[in-house]
Image (cartoon, rainbow, N blue to C red; front, side):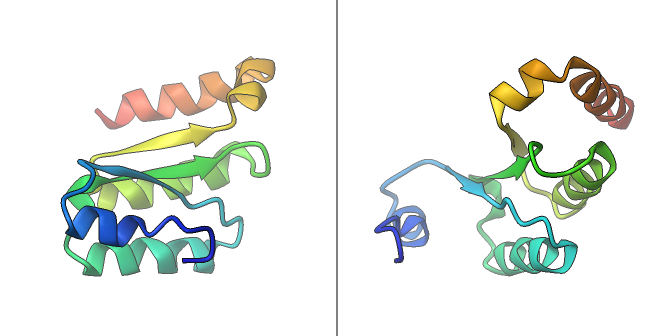
Length: 102
């Protein structure tokens, strides 16, 4: 409502197939709270969760990706491209762990 992006109504109304929700919270409790709220709405199969990399270390991002995976969301999106492109070792660490989960 704050930014005129009522994605919840869009999903419920069948206006879009899925949304990419940007959950850039660096505070773990705030991040997890949003994940739990989304899981409780029983529409998580239509939500891709965005996670910021530019303001968190690899371990914090992996913790968030594991929570997304554990809650059964279909996927995630990493932001920002510029940060990942400029920090190849960061990206490689993430990639190794994500591949190991498969």
